[in-house]
Length: 521
Image (cartoon, rainbow, N blue to C red; front, side):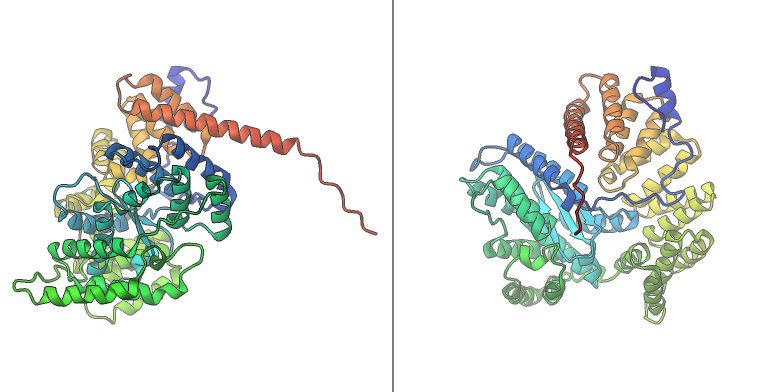
């Protein structure tokens, strides 16, 4: 990496225009970033929460919509910092499709709902202010149908629409937003007990512990509202009961490091009985809608989880058993193809995915993965054709748009590659290389302001100095009225503060006296 500060404008331009240096997100696995730093970074987390305290409205006052969304953005950043997001494009695409189908039943809403999968095997789900819904990968793996996935999403959307969390925060008139933020971090992020205690001391300063877990009244209301969303979307309402039964059975084995769904959603046993009553009543009604796709692409999504996240030998053994199960052959070939891609066995992946397409030619997810295999094999024209076919089948197939952008970028069609990435801009929140790719493409198009902006986002938090360099350049190159200027100012201030803290800590460590030698008698 060249030393960038102090470079001339032309050198900076040359750096951006050539920064890819042959790198491409899909041309070889990148080393995973080490984000599991909770225990070692409690002070940084406390600092972020205290920053929230300076921003937030006075205790007890109602949050405006803009404040709620801003709080949601800050929590999203915190969650992304301390939990790895699932970066599998097909998994993201599938969960998005189910979430959008359910969210379409809400009618007019003040939120732009987004759906995220946390790459963690625990069984949990939650929502935060502003309309972001999070599901843990372990919860999805526990399910057996798309209806069950829709049931959990419906429940979480109901919590958000009813503003349960916001109402709990407003009730806490005698507590600071830092106390609320600390408790939310402990509940939502599943911090280990030792970390939770340190966090509580840091943000509460000895004040009474705040309990922001949903009340049973909140849960009943979310069940009732979510049940209506689920039915209106055409899913089988019995699935909401079945998935909660699984959660209840699973709760005994939940990791102590992350709170179980049962802990954040109390009274599950009573609610199962209550929900079963709603199902019985609904089934008596004439003209009841049946489940639109009890398995459908859910099998493919389950296969993607096996192929992408489970230990390879275990995943292959599981997928091989699917060939003996009626209706699962296509998903089995798809999962084996995904597993081969993960292992760099591209010809094998192509063969498996071709067989999957022959069985499931109607699936944009299968075609999207086949296009990825063709891209790995260097057949860019075939990959472009396959990915365009996936988009024709499903214009909302995020994975196909993202992969098509990479194919077009390698072919030198930067304008069309940019257009494809702009269609799936929300993937920047979950795909580690999204901001890098779009930054490089803007650089190739000689749009250096946006190029520096996105590269700054990419390098934050992995390289603070390089992120600060790019954001500073972006501020000078983007128009003064650009809506991103405020975000850049905030990012620059945050980076400067973190660099000062880092320098102070380094000086403190270097000034420590050497440890005395132990004298043995």
